[in-house]
Picture 1 (cartoon, rainbow, N blue to C red):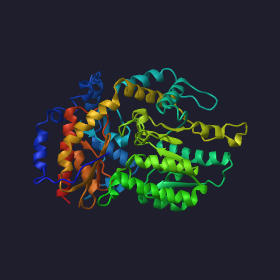
Picture 2 (picture 1 turned 90 degrees about the vertical axis):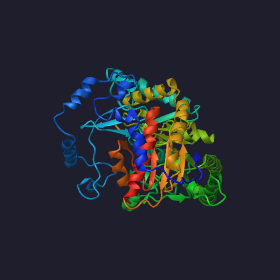
Picture 3 (picture 1 turned 120 degrees about the vertical axis):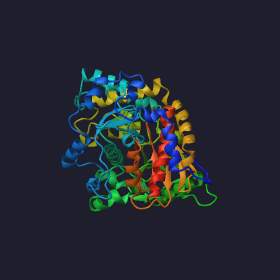
Picture 4 (picture 1 turned 45 degrees about the horizontal axis):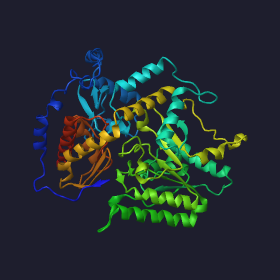
Length: 502
């Protein structure tokens, strides 16, 4: 984890200077309209016929937006914000994607700097993932996984087991991150029951944690905006101190904060461990609470406490897994493995809904019985869908063939250097980075900062959505040098334009 020292520029780079630098960047000017295909520039076939068809589309971007606002209820959105008015937030109708870019029906483009909600790892319309899916479509689109199995789900389960050094050798499949969390919670509770520990019924989460928005996942979430309206429906969980390194007082390091937070867990376990089934943690980065980063030591200490007090450790790697923090699994940086590991988002390359819960042998054995009531009977119709599994296999192939983790270290160093003017800005605090995640907290950002920033970002060809006053970047793993420089310069420009209007 990188935390930049507090440094201030005597004369922070102005938005005017950033725009001048941007104007000199040919990669950002030459591709501003639909006639240029970054996909073709990356060695794809260009799909010229597809692009031409988009150009000739009868309906305009505004037509699609109007139709969407009439019939689509968009997620995580106050729909009134899209209504015309002073605080109007644009709704963009995406026509197609190529590499790290999304295009609207006018041909304007947007660098997908947050990987379309943290899922797209290797770019839109990736030819290798496309090819794998086309091949799979001609073989098997779906088969129920109860009483049947198929090659993609077997191969994927085996490869994920190998990636965990066979510590987590059993894969249970679902469709999305919240569902994976639900499964892990149910498995933990049921496993303890099967082992005769019916007293273990409570769950522990971190302050500021986010694990999804289904009922069980919300119960272990501590973000009031998402949780409070449904409070009467939720089973209470115990909340412990977050190891967020931003809480460091004078003279404290990130490790010191991690030790303080672990001591809070220790106190809870010593007093109530007999009734606690599991603690759930987003390892290294609590994303939805503003990219709160912590030292790996915290995970190591909590693993030891879980072992000592017979508490399951659930790691929610839905956002931080698949190489996002610098290792394939975030927990590898602490040298530990959980009892349950939840994966989703990037595991399918951002193509198809897929989530997975990986578990230890002893968990699996707790359910292995002739007694059907001891079985884990959770299911959904598309469990282990062959298309989604094949996309995940293609994603793992790219990791291996392209040495993605090694290449990302070089890419991260370049973007970190390019972002230095933003780091040094007098209105930025707590600049931090972990792997392919960068975050910066805006000072005195003014009301409606995140909406104003998002709107200005779209004007400057960026897809960026701050969380409150936290600006963050989670780009796909394919940016070239020009795109890295352009992303850094425009992020600074967007920030300065936004705070100028505060």
